[in-house]
Length: 329
Image (tube, rainbow, N blue to C red; front, top):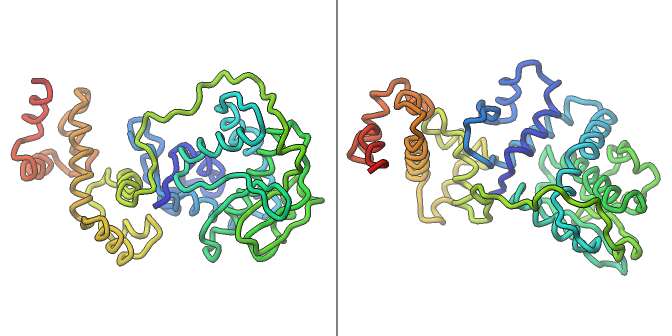
């Protein structure tokens, strides 16, 4: 199950901020937790569907020329430089792409970006499933902009786009992307790809000295294991208590039966996993001496601390207060 870093969701959320003057209504439309801006939240990842929802909202509610200009400006000024700053002085273009791809996986578990030699040419390739989904074309436009701006920055402007393969059926919207006016688009390809001349692929790197430490995450890692990814993705939505499986399936972009089947293949059922996540989160919060039992009860979706205490005791055979004292023994 694909998950994405909270920071990347915030990037797209900020792009959409002018679409709706009611911030919380925008969150509901994109199925994003209401507390995403709360510094006290300790989740790191969200379902990839949150970004898909946001980019679809942006694409459907903004003229395509404005959409492409906005994405281009933000990628060039903010989004891509943060990845380039994390590179650990790569000595070649190929090694830079390889390292950047590894860093991308820390931000988006299922990202696929790499160089490939095909048809006697080198290509920068991006893979993405979901071509028949509503969000796909807008997401591919973003990817094309990302790849173009990345190549431009990495080569200090020495590279210019000439041949681009896209998965979408036509290139009508892609021609609005700034800088790609003279490029040739090849549609309905199995991947998104930019042609890279030999002199660029073999070019040594001379990036400005990196003052930012290499990207090393100390947070829970995004995983290709379904159960681990499911827990990472759904945990942010449990601040209001247990989540019905129908709502969870909507958030994750899959139907109920598919979710049940995937969990069954992992040897678990939905209700058990949710109970486990809630208990883990409760214990995590109880370890913080600055939070009262009442505050924790509220954070876990309980209307009063008495109800929370009874529920905790049923599971742990001890009250939250007494459990907290055992942590200090």
